[in-house]
Length: 81
Length: 158
Image (cartoon, each protein chain N blue to C red):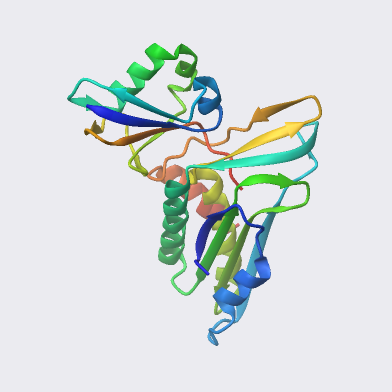
């Protein structure tokens, strides 16, 4: 299946892009997408324990199922305000 | 004017205050908060900040904060606008207005909102300082984290 991966802040800098499109073998979870991403870009791995994730701009969990066409976002710790 | 917004435009706390509280005759109190870009951070001389957001989720997270505050202080009403893009020293990055019949709820709802903004809204500061730049990272955003929510409530009611 095809997923759009969104990366923000330092994750975007480390990946060199804020938006990637990747083919992921299904069935997949957010964690499957993350594992595929960190295999490609190992430096992202340091965020494994502090990430938040979202599917289609709604907060989600690593174990949540991902469907074809979904936008999966990986968010480093936030610092708004 | 929307009650929640993530915008590249300069923030206007007076306009937001008028929007929220200008017509409701039951209000006896308005509390406002503006977060400003400071010229120093952790010993670094800050030149400017660049804010980045995951905009659709940030707007939803702000709306969620308004819902939470409505449950906690049913008489209070809130508006929260957050700016993104490049901000110079002294500019407002976030403005919050809370209106209610009595001052206690207005102060509490306003304080609760800024604490929750810092916990769960997907916005990031990129600090440009004398000699370099750094992404600031605070809280792992988890809106379902009851301990974080309780902490914000405790601070709001202190």
